[in-house]
Amino acid sequence: MSLKDTYIKKIAPELKKNLKIENSMEIPKVEKVVLNMGIGTYIRSGNKDYSTLQQHLALISGQAPVVKFAKKAISNFKLREGMPVGLTVTLRGDNMYNFLDKLVNIVLPRVRDFRGINKRGFDKDGNYNFGIKEHTIFPEIPQDDVVKNHGMQITVKTTAKDKNQGKELLTLMGFPFAK
Image (cartoon, rainbow, N blue to C red; front, side, top):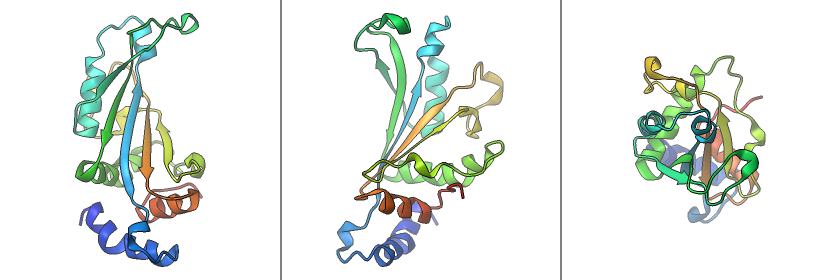
Protein backbone atom coordinates (compact mmCIF):
# COMPACT_ATOMS: atom_id res chain seq x y z
CA MET A 1 0.00 0.00 0.00
CA SER A 2 1.36 3.41 -0.95
CA LEU A 3 1.98 6.17 1.60
CA LYS A 4 -0.91 8.20 0.14
CA ASP A 5 -3.36 5.32 0.68
CA THR A 6 -1.97 4.75 4.18
CA TYR A 7 -2.46 8.44 4.95
CA ILE A 8 -6.08 8.40 3.78
CA LYS A 9 -7.08 5.11 5.45
CA LYS A 10 -5.03 5.04 8.67
CA ILE A 11 -3.08 8.21 9.44
CA ALA A 12 -5.83 10.82 8.88
CA PRO A 13 -8.40 9.10 11.15
CA GLU A 14 -5.75 8.61 13.84
CA LEU A 15 -4.68 12.28 13.59
CA LYS A 16 -8.33 13.34 13.88
CA LYS A 17 -8.68 11.30 17.07
CA ASN A 18 -5.28 12.19 18.62
CA LEU A 19 -5.51 15.94 17.94
CA LYS A 20 -9.24 16.10 18.78
CA ILE A 21 -10.15 17.67 15.44
CA GLU A 22 -13.84 17.83 14.59
CA ASN A 23 -13.72 19.09 11.00
CA SER A 24 -11.97 16.60 8.71
CA MET A 25 -10.71 19.48 6.51
CA GLU A 26 -8.52 20.65 9.44
CA ILE A 27 -6.54 17.39 9.56
CA PRO A 28 -2.88 18.24 8.82
CA LYS A 29 -1.42 16.85 5.61
CA VAL A 30 1.78 17.22 3.64
CA GLU A 31 1.41 19.99 1.05
CA LYS A 32 4.76 19.77 -0.77
CA VAL A 33 8.36 18.65 -0.44
CA VAL A 34 11.18 20.93 -1.61
CA LEU A 35 14.70 19.64 -2.31
CA ASN A 36 17.52 22.20 -2.42
CA MET A 37 21.15 21.65 -3.37
CA GLY A 38 23.67 24.49 -3.16
CA ILE A 39 26.27 24.42 -5.94
CA GLY A 40 28.17 27.64 -5.20
CA THR A 41 31.26 25.92 -3.75
CA TYR A 42 31.23 23.42 -6.63
CA ILE A 43 31.25 26.30 -9.15
CA ARG A 44 33.96 28.25 -7.26
CA SER A 45 36.26 25.21 -7.11
CA GLY A 46 36.74 25.53 -10.86
CA ASN A 47 34.03 23.24 -12.21
CA LYS A 48 31.82 25.13 -14.62
CA ASP A 49 29.83 22.04 -15.56
CA TYR A 50 27.22 21.19 -12.93
CA SER A 51 25.14 18.98 -15.24
CA THR A 52 26.03 15.83 -13.25
CA LEU A 53 24.53 17.40 -10.13
CA GLN A 54 21.43 18.30 -12.15
CA GLN A 55 21.19 14.71 -13.38
CA HIS A 56 21.63 13.34 -9.87
CA LEU A 57 18.91 15.60 -8.43
CA ALA A 58 16.64 14.62 -11.33
CA LEU A 59 17.26 10.94 -10.57
CA ILE A 60 16.57 11.46 -6.86
CA SER A 61 13.37 13.46 -7.32
CA GLY A 62 11.99 12.09 -10.57
CA GLN A 63 11.69 15.52 -12.17
CA ALA A 64 14.06 18.12 -13.60
CA PRO A 65 15.56 20.62 -11.14
CA VAL A 66 15.39 24.38 -11.58
CA VAL A 67 18.72 26.23 -11.57
CA LYS A 68 18.75 29.27 -9.26
CA PHE A 69 21.06 32.17 -10.09
CA ALA A 70 22.59 34.84 -7.82
CA LYS A 71 20.50 38.02 -7.79
CA LYS A 72 23.37 40.27 -6.75
CA ALA A 73 27.15 40.13 -6.40
CA ILE A 74 28.74 39.55 -2.97
CA SER A 75 32.50 39.95 -3.08
CA ASN A 76 33.22 38.17 0.23
CA PHE A 77 31.71 34.99 -1.19
CA LYS A 78 33.34 35.48 -4.62
CA LEU A 79 29.82 35.60 -6.00
CA ARG A 80 28.90 37.42 -9.18
CA GLU A 81 25.46 38.41 -10.32
CA GLY A 82 23.96 35.73 -12.57
CA MET A 83 26.20 32.89 -11.32
CA PRO A 84 24.40 29.58 -10.68
CA VAL A 85 24.15 29.04 -6.91
CA GLY A 86 21.63 26.26 -6.41
CA LEU A 87 19.30 23.60 -7.74
CA THR A 88 15.77 23.17 -6.45
CA VAL A 89 12.89 20.75 -7.02
CA THR A 90 9.34 21.02 -5.68
CA LEU A 91 7.40 17.76 -5.39
CA ARG A 92 3.62 17.60 -5.02
CA GLY A 93 0.93 14.94 -5.28
CA ASP A 94 1.89 11.35 -6.03
CA ASN A 95 5.56 12.22 -6.70
CA MET A 96 5.75 13.75 -3.22
CA TYR A 97 4.25 10.71 -1.49
CA ASN A 98 6.50 8.33 -3.47
CA PHE A 99 9.57 10.38 -2.53
CA LEU A 100 8.62 10.48 1.18
CA ASP A 101 7.98 6.74 1.19
CA LYS A 102 11.40 6.11 -0.40
CA LEU A 103 13.08 8.59 1.97
CA VAL A 104 11.67 7.06 5.15
CA ASN A 105 11.89 3.37 4.25
CA ILE A 106 14.97 3.10 2.02
CA VAL A 107 17.23 6.16 2.13
CA LEU A 108 17.42 7.19 5.81
CA PRO A 109 18.21 3.63 7.03
CA ARG A 110 21.20 3.66 4.62
CA VAL A 111 22.84 6.59 6.44
CA ARG A 112 25.99 5.57 8.27
CA ASP A 113 25.59 5.55 12.11
CA PHE A 114 21.96 6.63 11.78
CA ARG A 115 20.23 7.34 15.09
CA GLY A 116 17.23 9.24 13.79
CA ILE A 117 16.60 12.72 12.46
CA ASN A 118 16.55 15.75 14.72
CA LYS A 119 13.20 16.70 16.29
CA ARG A 120 14.17 20.38 16.40
CA GLY A 121 13.82 20.90 12.64
CA PHE A 122 10.22 22.14 12.97
CA ASP A 123 9.29 25.77 12.52
CA LYS A 124 6.35 27.45 14.28
CA ASP A 125 3.97 26.51 11.42
CA GLY A 126 4.63 22.75 11.61
CA ASN A 127 6.94 22.53 8.58
CA TYR A 128 10.03 20.33 8.87
CA ASN A 129 13.55 21.06 7.55
CA PHE A 130 16.55 18.78 7.64
CA GLY A 131 19.79 18.30 5.77
CA ILE A 132 21.54 15.32 4.26
CA LYS A 133 25.34 15.45 4.09
CA GLU A 134 25.79 13.05 1.17
CA HIS A 135 23.47 12.79 -1.81
CA THR A 136 24.99 9.37 -2.56
CA ILE A 137 22.77 7.65 0.04
CA PHE A 138 20.00 7.60 -2.55
CA PRO A 139 20.04 4.25 -4.40
CA GLU A 140 19.46 5.92 -7.81
CA ILE A 141 22.86 7.62 -7.79
CA PRO A 142 25.54 5.56 -9.57
CA GLN A 143 28.51 5.48 -7.19
CA ASP A 144 31.17 5.41 -9.91
CA ASP A 145 30.43 8.83 -11.47
CA VAL A 146 30.32 10.79 -8.20
CA VAL A 147 33.19 13.29 -8.23
CA LYS A 148 32.37 15.00 -4.93
CA ASN A 149 29.75 14.26 -2.28
CA HIS A 150 27.14 16.96 -2.11
CA GLY A 151 24.67 17.82 0.63
CA MET A 152 21.06 18.76 0.20
CA GLN A 153 18.27 20.26 2.25
CA ILE A 154 14.80 18.74 2.37
CA THR A 155 11.79 20.82 3.44
CA VAL A 156 8.47 19.14 4.18
CA LYS A 157 5.69 21.77 4.03
CA THR A 158 2.55 20.77 5.94
CA THR A 159 -0.85 22.30 6.59
CA ALA A 160 -0.36 21.85 10.35
CA LYS A 161 -1.14 24.81 12.61
CA ASP A 162 1.82 24.34 14.97
CA LYS A 163 4.90 22.25 15.78
CA ASN A 164 2.98 19.58 17.67
CA GLN A 165 0.55 18.88 14.84
CA GLY A 166 3.40 18.71 12.33
CA LYS A 167 5.42 16.40 14.55
CA GLU A 168 2.42 14.12 15.10
CA LEU A 169 1.75 13.95 11.34
CA LEU A 170 5.33 13.08 10.40
CA THR A 171 5.68 10.59 13.26
CA LEU A 172 2.60 8.72 12.06
CA MET A 173 3.98 8.82 8.50
CA GLY A 174 7.02 6.90 9.78
CA PHE A 175 9.71 9.59 10.06
CA PRO A 176 12.46 8.13 12.30
CA PHE A 177 12.97 10.92 14.86
CA ALA A 178 15.84 10.60 17.34
CA LYS A 179 14.85 9.49 20.81
